[in-house]
Length: 364
Image (cartoon, rainbow, N blue to C red; front, side, top):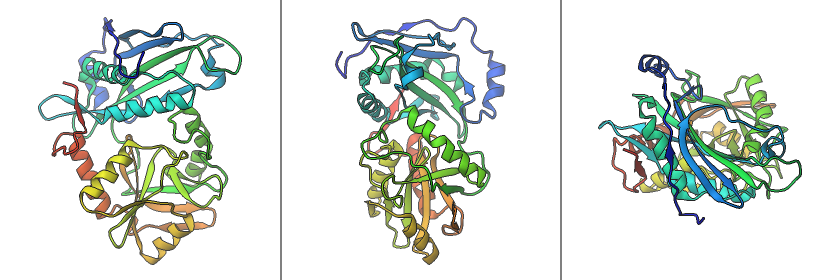
């Protein structure tokens, strides 16, 4: 199957979906990643059959053999994107084709079969359309989690011959639970996220598992997130545990660390680069050291810093903490440029403002 072919999806709808009153109660305050919808999409792959057996069905546990390859060799990738409710009662996705393409790139890096873009998009559309009642009103959204894992039953180090692709959905509110005006970050002195030649540019579970100890260390030091430095020199800022990062300077310019294989190519990051340049803002993709970050914050040259990603959207960074002390960025809260770019991005995502780059994908 090529990267563009499609499949016919069978529909097996839930015979007893959650009652409307119970669903409404959950949607009042869904949190993040705890409230799940009634259905899921599954598509199977075998090297002798290609992609097949595509269907939407009631969300349920996955039967799994204890020798399933993913449990031993971690061949697994995933994506994250959101469906938004629009004023006319419809629903949209934001740049889902970019998620589909990144999913393909992640699959290639982990020696997994490439899922056609059209199948990825149809799977997401079908789940959103079927579980449309689960999209929260207001600032909430329906978070989609497409993922794929190795499902061959064997013990031995080789690419699996059997895979399962799924999409599940979760009604979500804000990602960060803090009521503070900005988040705090811990600079990890001992742990790195990715090294040159590794899987840093792939969205695979192993990258996140490797970040958990550093994130626990950040929590221990009273911080919301960990920020990683490069693996070679341990001085260049790369990204947070699950988000990219931007810096805003007193001359109005902005910097974000360059990609290059160790940083996840975030879709929110790419969108913000475009939106900033649309406004005539000078944005540079260049290395920025932790020493320079500290010096620029002290001198006032650095006015703002923010994290960005599908889950966190655009989140200001107020405090940076490390073993040798801490420093504050600007006034310790959000800045004008951060709020401006967030407003433009969210306005497009939710269909409230013009979409000059045709990023919005209408589901229904």
